[in-house]
Each structure stands twice: as structure tokens, then as C-alpha cells.
Amino acid sequence: WIDESKLGTKSDGLGSADDLKCALSGYITSALLVASKITESLVKADKMEQSGCRNTIPLAAIAAENIDLGLKNERGSLTRSDPIKSPPQVLKRGDIQRNESLLNSRDKSQTNHLEAIDYVRMNCPPGILSDVGNKTDRLFALGVVFVELFAFGNPTFDADAINEIKASANAKSSGDTKMKPTIDSTNNVPLKKRRSDQEQGSSSEISGKLALLGTPRPLCALVEDLIECIRGEFRRDDAYKTFEDVYLDLQLMINEPSKYLFDNHMPQLTISDKLYGRDEEMLKIQEAYKLRSTGVCLGVIITGEASVGKSRLARSIDELSWQNNGTVLRGKFDQVQESQPLSVIANMFNDMCQLFAEAVRSQGMKQNLASALESALGSQARLLSRFLPNLPRLMTLNFTQNSSSYCSESTQVIRRLFCKTLQVLSFYSPGPITILLDDVQWADPASLLLISSLLQCSKENKRVFFLFCVRDNEIQHSLDSPVHNWYQSTFEMPLKHITLANLSEDGVNAMVSDTLCLFPRLTRPLSRVLHRKALGNPFFVWQTLKVLQKEGYLYHSLRGTMRRWMWDMDKISDLRISENVLFLLMSEMNKLPSDMRMGLEVASCMGANVSMV
Image (cartoon, rainbow, N blue to C red; front, side, top):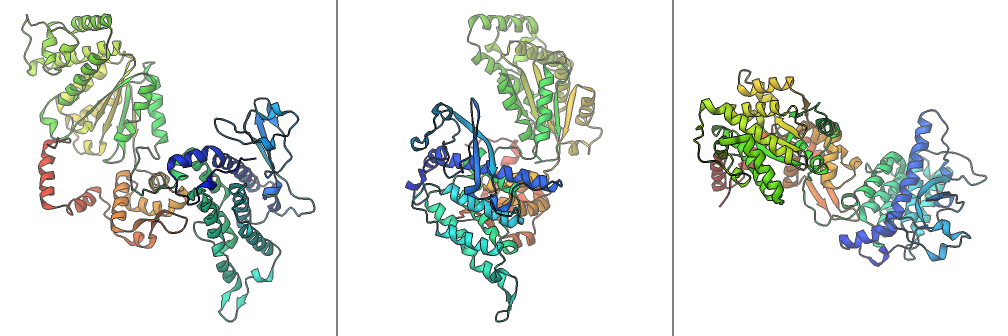
């Protein structure tokens, strides 16, 4: 069914990522898809049994020689009665490779365009009892199928180990007295325990031989954790518990091979830019963005505590804007810049003017844009140019009249000029303009008034979308402050409010799994401890991981076929880690040299961003 593996040429199993990707496009891709389909059938059968129905897949049917695959092409289904050891065609994503020695069908045109696996059928041999067995027996049987599947066609693979573990399984199922849990009077140890200790090397031996064929090591580990189930209740903690876990791991290998299938030979603890556990919040932003074109929703306000992930969630708007040919303008307030009124929004609008000046190439479009701005701003454009130095690149300023100077009486004029500029530029923009303002709790009063004016004047403008990030817990501490009053006024605007809480245990596990490139079932115990210590704060979880690595509690192991991140769970559980992010950062900063700490103290007085010369 699958073409001969090209991985056999990589005897050391340490090839480059490009070589592995090339191999993946052939044998491994096909084998993973077959393995996933087989496991999916077993998952469905187990769910039927849980719902009170009879399990339709006996234990004896979970064997390579008893599994039939039905293939599907553009003409429909192709029914096959041959087992997977003699299938007619190679299945690939993207393109199809044909094995000429297997194209013996009378109607070869039917086998030239195979696209997917239509079905998997597991047949119980005649005369065999339809016993379903226990969970560990069934998981072990699937492991044997996978061993034959991932080593099929390679003459260098020694099948003796497979025959040995098959014999062990048959002895166990037939009630061999050696497998009974009787007590050895000499050592006072259950014979089953002694037997399983002897079998402990079987699973690692199988995975080691698969690795020598060039099979990716995470895939070898998956097979090993299935074969390990032969030990029953004495199996390792990493051994599989359910078929559903096997199916989820296979899907991760198929969908994200760079993380979960290829070997990681450069073990660096780096966090990706992905969002974890925020699917519901992302969906709300997408819905609000779609409603913008109808005038029903003007934007979104994301609230939550510090380091909970508000800024990262807000950045998810980039893909939506790109899909709609839009533009995202960003501004971030900080406590130092509060003494410079309107500076954040002015810099953002100035960048927008520069963007339009560089993007508009047509001379006719430039003239139309300049005329629209001159008509909207008039002689007061010179006043606005004090805030927007790039404005003269879009229009000609009139210096014949004296414009008003910036004072308390002209703040309304300034706000009106900003609003008109936004209206004109959004009209000439090829797509919607998104205004993203972060840390609004530190905005100066003049900027808050300008934000309110921009919201008011954009109610009928379907080409502008607002996105704000606010620490609502800091606003609640100052009930009479301008920012609190502004925040309360947003509930009367067509804005959606999203409150971002700390990550759940599943969200933390998704983050840890992705960071360590390990299956979620393996990282779940570690994630449970990290969630308890970090209270689900994603930034604190990441900082805690770095501390654990630095102190040696989290390390990358190169022993055996595993080559993965390992950890000392007992020491991590007993480790006292501060539940406050600030104290954790302070403890890390105190380890820096004194002159570096002094430099950071000086830089902290200059704002959120400092240019180092």
C-alpha cells in the first residue's frame, strides 16, 4: 500500500530537516495517514461501547493481516478486500506516486487518481472468539500494527523482536501460568512483576530499531509507548491510556510535523507567537470585525490584568486586516509619556500619513487625496502639521493665514482636525483602517478626549475599526480619574467588551506542549504544577519555565531514542516559586551585574522603548 521507505538510507537517523521533509512527503506521510485512520476507527468503536453498544472490533481483528483499506478517487469509492500488506496504491498529500509492481488491476484508470482513504475494516479471522480484550491489550495490538506499518518494505528490519512480543502477548491472553500474579517465595515479588521487568526492554528495542531505519524519533517514541502497554498495570506513566490520545498525537504529527515529528537537535527554550486557550476570544474579535462593515460594531475593548495576553490577542487582528486589504495603526501608552499630551495618537497618525505618501503612486489619486484634505482641513491644516510632520507630504499647506496656536481653547479644534483626517484617509484607503491602542489606562486626559471624539465621528464610518487594551483592575482603583470616566462611557458606545482571564489548565498545557515540542499527554503533569504555581498567567508560566531550565530542573535529554525535554517532577512540585510576577522578575534582575542593573534603572525612566547607542 505504501512505497518503499527512503528513510533506510539514513542509518544514523540524524539527517537534516530538509531530508526528513523529503522523506515525509513519501512513506511517512502515507503511513501516518493510514495509522490515523485505523486509530480513528478504534476510537469510534470504544465510544460506541461506552454508550452501551457492543464493541464491533474484537482484539484479534487489530492485526495488520486483518485490516482492509478502502480507497477513494474522483470517481467514488474503490472497495478492496486485500489486507494492508498487499495494497494497490500509495496515498500522498498533494500528489500520488504509483508502485508499478502493484498496478495489476484490470481497470488501471481507476487507480491513477487516488485521493483519500475511504474506510478501514478490521476483520476477525474465522474460528476466533470475538473477545475485545482489555484496554492495554488493545493498545499493545495497535502498537504491533504500527511497528509493521512503519517498518514495512525495509529488508534491514529484524522482525524477531516483533515475534517475541507477539508470543508474549499470546501467552498472556491464553492464561500462561508464568503470567499469573503468584508470589515468588524466593524474592517475595509477584511473577507478573518479574515478567514485566524482563519485557521492559522490548518496547525500547523496537523503537531503537525503527530509529536506525531513519524513522523520526518522536514516532519511535509513540510506537514504544504503545508496545509498553504489554506490561499492563506495570507499564510506564508515559504509556498510552486510550486510543483517543493516540489519535490526537498522530494528528499533531500530521498537522505540525516541524514540532511533533522532526527531531529537535537544537534544544532551545523558545516561546512561539501563538495564542493558547483564546479560541473563544478570537472568535468574538472576528465577529466584531465582520459587523464593522454593517455599522453595528465599532470595535473591541480587551480588559484584563497585566501579562494576561491582551496585547498578543489584539495582534490577531493583523491577519483579519490583511485578508481585507486593510491597515493596522498601533499606539502604546506608558506612564512616562503621559506628560506629552496626544503624543501616542499623533505619532500613529503621522505614520499613517507616511504610509499613504509612500503607497499612493498614481498622480491622479495623489491630487484627489490632496484636494480632499485641503477641503476638510482648510487653513487649519498648518496647526495639525505641528502634530503630523508628514502631513505636508499629502497636501500643500496654506501659510497666508495665521492659524490658532495650541492652547486650551483650541483643543476642540485639534480633535476635529484629527477626526476629519481619519475620515478622508479611510475613504481613500484600499481597505479598513484598524486603530489599535494598548495600555489605555496610562493615556493622558487629552488623548482620552481625542479617542472619544474619534469614536463619535466614526459611528457612521464603516471603514474604521478600533481595538483597545486596558488593565481594568488599575482603572478600578481610581474611580474619579479621567480614564475611569472614559472607560465607563465606552459601555454606551457600539463596542464589544472582552474580559481576558488567566489561562485554564488546558491552555497552560497547550502552551507547554508547544514550547517543549512534546505531546500534550506527556506535558500534562508538568502543566498542572505550573498552572498551580503561576495561577494560569501566561507570562508567569513562561518565566517559570526559564527559571526551571536555568536551575536544572528542566533539561534536554539525549539518551536513548527519546531526545526530548525531561524534568524532575518531585523537585518542581516542592520548589517554592513566588506567585507574583514582579517578585520573580526582581529576583532574576538582582542576579545581573551591578552596572547593568544601574543602566536598566536609568533606562526605565525614559519610557517603554529606549534606543541604545
